[in-house]
Image 1 (tube, rainbow, N blue to C red):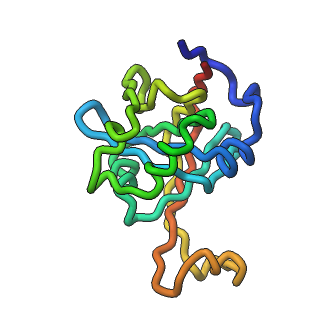
Image 2 (image 1 turned 180 degrees about the vertical axis):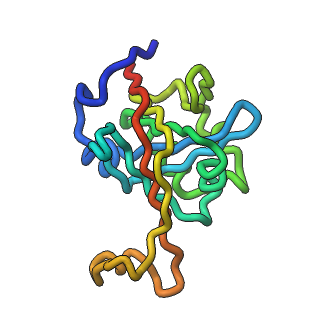
Length: 166
């Protein structure tokens, strides 16, 4: 069903894949996993590696799964899954079983869980995790994304180990 491709052969840009189409970030194992929708991130080259950069708030249930696991997946879907992606971005895995609610089929055939319904799967290995802080020269324009009492995201820089495409 899936075939491995190089990151350079992706048909869409990360602007489209992450910013427009959104992605699910998934971490965990066969015993327990969680997923969340993200529309902030990037793909590129850093430290001579193909990387995916994701931003996750510590209050998100998926955050703990990301911190506990060395690897995670980012998955991308066609338009028919927009309702499921919306649910995964607005509901917490603490309160509902998002995988069940979305009728997703978890796949554990790689080093990180992903869903068979995805069109594109990116398997990622964490390289660097750092909390964002307001003193890191965030401009006023960027600070508008946060309330005064809002928590800042953590930055996850991950090596792209494998890209799978249907």
